[in-house]
Structure formats: structure tokens, C-alpha cells
Length: 558
Image (cartoon, rainbow, N blue to C red; front, side):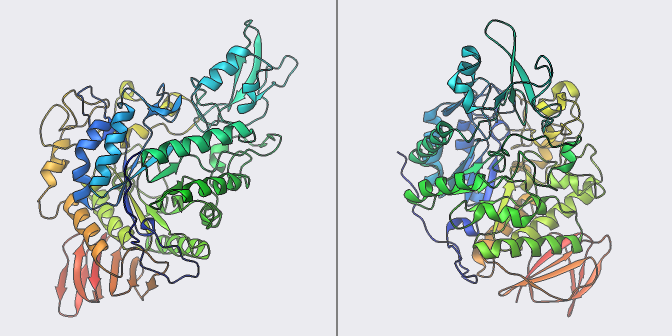
């Protein structure tokens, strides 16, 4: 068992009844996408040894914890989110010994480790599913998934009208051991990802065991993939609508955000609480409202939930203020920290989203105005880090990386790219391996190239190029995270104080601190609220007035 970190209580606010104090309350958590972070063995694919070697960089960046996307044994039909063995490391990433070394080194550096957990579905190469197919109708293992007879005279139609998130029907028909057409099985994502049946006690037992396995290894928590999807409505009723993707996030669906999921997470919480060091669970839960998201972080369930409403908000002062207020209000009654996130491995990087006109969604195919996008991304980062709660940083955003929007079709590997009528399928653009050095075959990613092609000029955005460079995005992140840690008014808490501001401008106060944000395309003159601490772009102060440039955020101490 890995030696675990001591558990200092870094949360400092107790301004809400029942407010839980813990390291996660104000943590800055860095997402590592292992394929694309660092390659330790020169095969062109990122791995755990590469992550371990680069942990000092993350310590120096100032983050509190590292969240690792899946590294489990997997056929990689969906970049590791199709798990064949939850207790094994895929050989492309290393071994269990590599995982143990990573956890130990992270703890030695004062970093915590959060791992992805994928409980909604397994790989079709999981031993349970392979046996269920091989044994045919009547196999007890089929009850651990959703096998159903088809509709129609010969069972030739899917059991219901549900559509896959990746496009097409959410059902695939099997062949019986004798070769005849058989039952259908449910997969809300790719056909290689059959959904578990969480009404079966063996599924719940297995995942409690998996939790303990990784907690015994020393991990500090779990990011729960598709946390809203485990329980399906009784009887798997038809939805009665096509273009179902357009409904996601607007309505409670029969396969998402069912109330039964909460019993599962209450049972998990009892396990987490048995271990020392404040182990946590984080929900990836796409829900229609932040109020429903708050259900996942009630005091006896998970500790955090991703704030996708915030991630989806346009660069607009009024819209940002509305979602900030609603997010804080939703989390306050349950005593959970609000989380803030701008990018992750499933959406277009915010430096590119903000480079395009609003209303295009979170997967965008065009590069847009690169200078404007970077300017807004830097400003948005300072706003995010000024808000009370916990912030998530996706690898490479601290370099101001844009999405790679011009990847050739033959290079793409996102499974939804190859399925019609599903997600846009352009997630590869945010997954291109990050640059570490100005030069080299993969800009320091590794000695053997990179699994997705990196664009020309990537080296000028590298860690090497930006380290120590005044005004670089990397140095802005380092300074902001350090100031956030040191300033007593930043970090944990549940409230902001909005101050009077012109249209398109936000002025928010926290104890001893003011943040001014100009989301417009023109400079705005404001009264100087205090002593300048940090700015996303140079600002001019003339006596008692500051001219805030377009798309700029400034931090002030008061």
C-alpha cells in the first residue's frame, strides 16, 4: 500500500452551515490525458513513466492534485474509456508498478492523484461480456448488462428507440453461439462499450471492490465518468423523439440523471470515508440544471461535480454573472464547493472556443481569431481562479494552446468521428500531444514522434519557450495559482460580492480582493479599486482611473 499524504485542511471558509472543510474545497486540479502528456519509452504514445518524470513541472506550476484520464487495460476503442480490466494497466501506458511509482512520487512532491473510474459501461472485451456472448441466451452474466430481445416479427428491430451519444442506435444485435440472430445489448456510447446493469448486485459488488483496490494503492480520489448514466428508467421506455442529442442537458432522460444513481454514490461515500487523508469522488454529471448537479454532492454522496454549465457559457459578462450566481446558489445548501472548468479532453480548448462567435457549442471546427481567443482565454482563466471553490486545468491550457482544427481525416482517432449523426467527432483537436521544448521530433513529448500530428510552430508555445518569459501564458498561470494560494481572500468559500460596473464588465469582490473583467471589444475606464496584483494583459493606470483593455481581467488587493 502506498504511503498516503497527510491531510491538511486547506479550506478556509465556514460561511455556510454544514460547510465541509477539506483540501478539495479550493484545490486547483490538473487534468492529465496520459496519451498526450509525456512519452517515457519513445513509442509515440504518452505513458505513466512519462507522467512520473514530469511531475516536478506540475508541482512547480502550483497545482494541488493531478487527475489522470483512463490508463486501464483496454482495446482502446474509445481512448481507454472502454475498460477490459479495471485492476490492470494497459501495456501502452505501463504496468501496475509504474502506477505505484507515479502515486508514490506524486505524494513525495505534495501532489494528490485522482484516477478516472468508468462505471457506466465496460469494454466488449471485458471477461463478463465475452462470457455472456459465448454462453448465449440464458447466461447469468447477461443480467449484468442490458440484453433484450428485439422488436418485430423476427426480433429484427432494436428493443427501444434510444440513440447512441456517438450516433446511430444505442443497441447492437448479437449472434447466438450457433450463428443465428440473437438478442440486442445496450450501449449509450460505442458498440464496443456495453452498458452495465446496475440493478444487478454483482455489478455494485464489483465496483466497491474496484474502489478499494485503487484506494489501497494510495489514490486520493476518483473522477466518475458518466456519473449520471448508471441507472436507467424502469422498463427502458421509448423516448419518443429523434435527434436525441439535442435534448441532452435540457431534460431528464430515461437513461441519464435518474434518481437511483444517488443510492450508488451513498454506498461509495461510506467506503471513501473509511480511508485516511480525505479521499474524494468527483462527478462527471451532465444534468439539465445546476440544482440537479447539486444532488450528486450532498453531504453523504460525492465531494465535487463538474460545472458544465460554466464551461458552456459564452464570453459575456451578463451570462457569466448569471451562471456564477446560480452555481454558487445551488452548491451552498449542500455545503459542497462549486467547481469551475474551461477545457477538458472532450471539448474544444477555450482558447479556440473564445476565438469564434458565440453559439457554436463546445466542439468547434474552425480556428477563429487566434489573438482574440488567447486574449479572452487568459482573461477567463483569471476570472475562474478568482471564484470561490475548486478549479480544473486541462493540460496545455496553461500554454495557451489552441485546438488543432486542421488534422487530416486519416489521422483522426475519435470514434465518434466515424459514426454518422453523433457528436461532431472533433475531440482529437484538444488531444494533440503538448509541446515541452522548442525543437525535436515531437517538441519534447518523446523520442518517437507523437500519436497525433503536432502542428508546425508548436515549439514556440512550449514549456521551454514560455518558462521565464515575461507575459507568457505559462507564467501567468504560475503567478495566478501562487497568488490564489497565498491570498487569504481567495480559494474556498461560497460567495462573491458584485459591485457596480458598466455593461460588459464584471467587478466582483472577495475578502481583501477585487477582480475586474472586461468582456467587451473596447477599453473601459474604471475607478482603481486597489493595488494591482495581476493582469491578463498590460493595463494603464492614471491616478484614480484604470483603463481596462478589451478582453482583460485584473486582480487587485484592497
